[in-house]
Length: 319
Image (cartoon, rainbow, N blue to C red; front, side):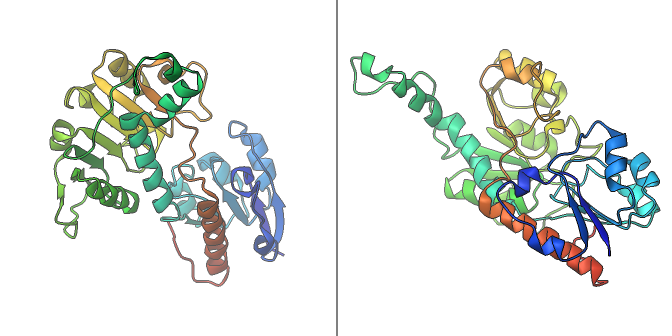
């Protein structure tokens, strides 16, 4: 029977079940695997033909020593967790899940933006701390509030998620521009493709929607920030390594950037010395844009279907 190993299922399966996976082979489930311990990873995938991973890295060293490995299923859209070149070299099929979370991440992107511009959470907290009851007026606020109408949203990357974010922005009467590595000739007439420098210069809000590659790591840094409008708002629901965190913290603390709202950081879980934790006007959520129950159920279903397709000899979503 085919040996299947799931390396890190807790974030997905703590409230979902995997009965269909049990029907496809001899399954071993792990809630968590130490991502920094190669010996543990190698021990757990020893003799496995099929490995399913969420965030446990499979680099060239690990792949080279996994002699029976034939298939890697990535439970997510980004595939930087796997050395794809090494997998191809060893004739291992790798699949991902391209669009399972598009709706959820687009929704969360705007949740972050609305929190920055509307400060709902902050003022709810202040009311519960009895700050409202102590003022003489019927209203009060302690941070600026902003309308989105007429503001320019710049999207770096224009894949499935960014396109959904663009539609939400259009409904808010925002101007939408985007930068994409390849031309997007079929973009909506109200969304304008521009160069990266044009996007940096024109945007009131910049939202990141590119995968992590050598070209996109630290794409937001001291140099690119210097090309932006003062008091720009930056959103990141993609990958933490897209932002140089030291440069960003400095820009926030010197009011060069008005606010950062991010669901991801370079090292996750976040380290206590991350400079963003003490930066001004910085909202950080713990990588939850993908996590609604409906989204995770969809992810589970597609993970199973990817594996079924591979076992039937007709793999889909191949990286």
